[in-house]
Image 1: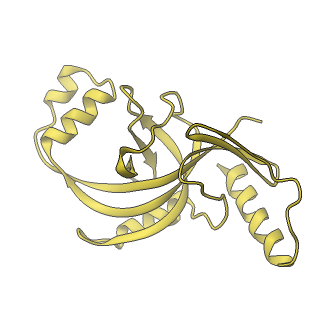
Image 2: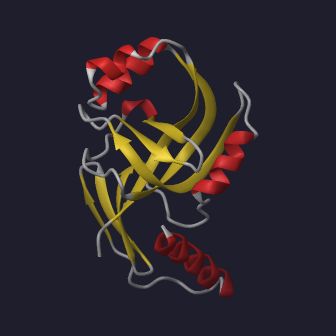
Length: 176
């Protein structure tokens, strides 16, 4: 996490020093829905809409934004956080660590999916953050997708306030 934040801050500092400087060696390789971008010395796999790794909030800054939201409020934002879990059926959602809680990330128009093996990885997401109340039925569905036991699923009996996010683009840092 510290390396990702350091890389993002470094990019911001370097880009603000001279607005006339162009990146000469930035390469983009496209495949179906996945692209790889090189920003400075950090490479990313890109999913959904193409986004950049600049002007990214930390997970703690994002948590502060969530604390100020009320149901019905939305905020457009880009932030970096650790993946806690991913849908093991299709990769159609993921949960991100945003400090004291986890945010439930879904993908705009069900238009792209995440690899199922990225729990523990750092990602950057861009989209709309909001507060939602998740029904018992939805909680049980997501618990089933996450591979929870029948006993764990049966313990879900009340609606839950959730930190929600609809992502239009995601970057996953590639291992260097």
